[in-house]
Image (cartoon, rainbow, N blue to C red):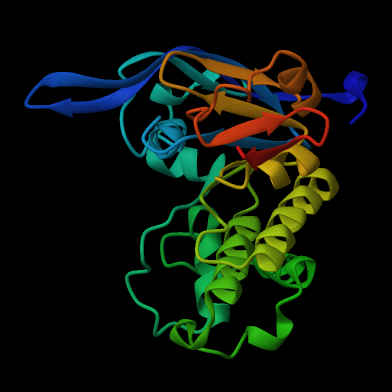
Length: 264
């Protein structure tokens, strides 16, 4: 991306995330600071239990923040109602669909719901957005299938298409490569990079595929129990941010190959 053309769309300041348990805050991570721009692919990585999914759900206002500020286009998300938020952020979570009996086309069309009138009538613009998303993700051959007939990889592509049809500046995905083999993991993440760069959207995803993310992402957010660090893959490698991501008795990060290796 040309830095002169960067457009900041998301800003996170001194964010603390977690849950309210019996009116008592259960802190998972704190002091999270970063900003992100349109046309950027951003990975959130870290070990199990550090708060990757919690962070994404907090960014999308699915669960409340404990402290700090999240702003979209300079506007605090606390000031956005659900419809306004759905016009800013599209979300792909790991939860099972309420019904898989929908056809692929029907599921994708639901992505236009935040933009339609009160009876859900599609305008010509809505139809054009749906068609554009379908062709961009290349799933024309799946449109008449029921969602229960799809493989995990196919269903993930359909969910990404629905998010793309929603036509928001920000797309957030929680573990979009779960249950996929390494080829389809790489294919999904390459697709996300193409969407970010070609459609000028901010795409944020959580992943355990750190090696692939290092190769593909513009920036990464590395979450650990003690701190969260943001930067480009090269900046994070130089600052040794990956070196202590996991216990060193078994896994080591090799900065020369930019990948994790088992300790011999």
